[in-house]
Length: 79
Image 1 (tube, rainbow, N blue to C red):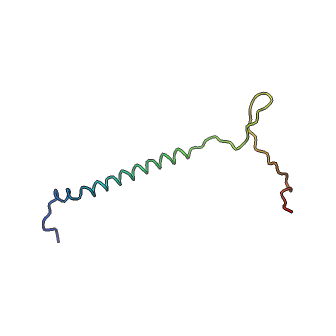
Image 2: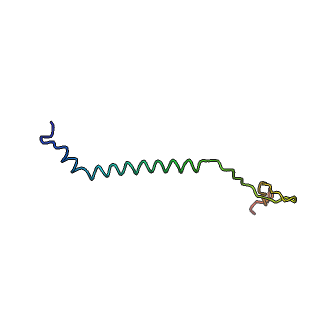
C-alpha cells in the first residue's frame, strides 16, 4: 500500500535538518578516517633511534655503545 498523498518537495523540506545531520556525520567520519590514516603512517615509519649511550672517544669522535649494567651477576640476592 502506498502513501495516498505524496509530495516529494514538501517531504524534502520537512526532512532537511535530518539530511544535513546525516551528511555532517558522513563528512565527520571520512575526516576521522583520513586523520587516523595520517597518524598511523606518520608513527609507523622506522626512525633510526638507538638505545645506546653516546660516548666521546679520545680522538673527538662519538660512538654508540650499549649501556653497562652496574649490578654484577649473583649480587641481586635478597637476604
